[in-house]
Length: 212
Image 1 (cartoon, one colour):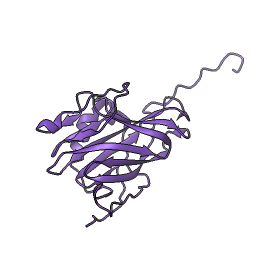
Image 2 (cartoon, one colour):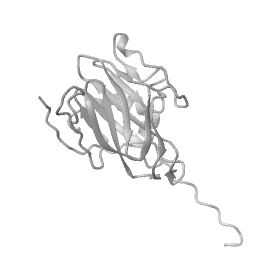
Image 3 (tube, helix red, strand yellow):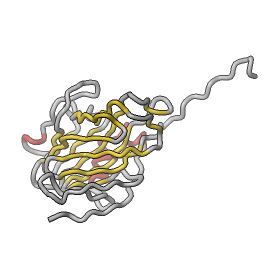
Image 4 (cartoon, helix red, strand yellow):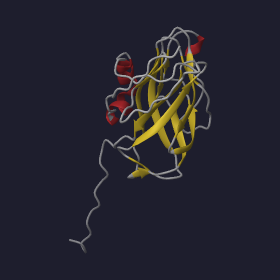
């Protein structure tokens, strides 16, 4: 039996809130589940579907709530074609069984690595609450566990992230990137995640005397 699929619009992420208070903000808003996009109903379900969301970054796949999905802001006007961009999101497992984010893909990247937190960013009880190793600069990848009744934060301060490698096009701030996440039990979920706008504008060049 498939679950109904609905599309709604989420609230836009705020750069300073996510980077300096990502863990607190995510924990506070993960409980606000109604404004979500419902996705697939599990890997075993033949009726598992994926739906894209225009301008959205909140979603739900089975018992997994997804919040604050976004691409990090570029240092230059855009993430360069052929380069790597990091994506972040917060997850909450409302089910009675642990789940895991096992893989991801993006239409704008050749491949996407799932890098679990480096020792923080997973809350819950029992053995399933222990995250796999991984750091922002490491090549260690693999499933990222989401304990039953607990959360997983792929955020800058936890070391966890999604690495979009081999970008097939430049990614500009404010642009949306179509992401697909696959969970071990909850199934597949697709949505459009925004490229974050820098919280501070780039400095304006100082005019030379020749141009004054």
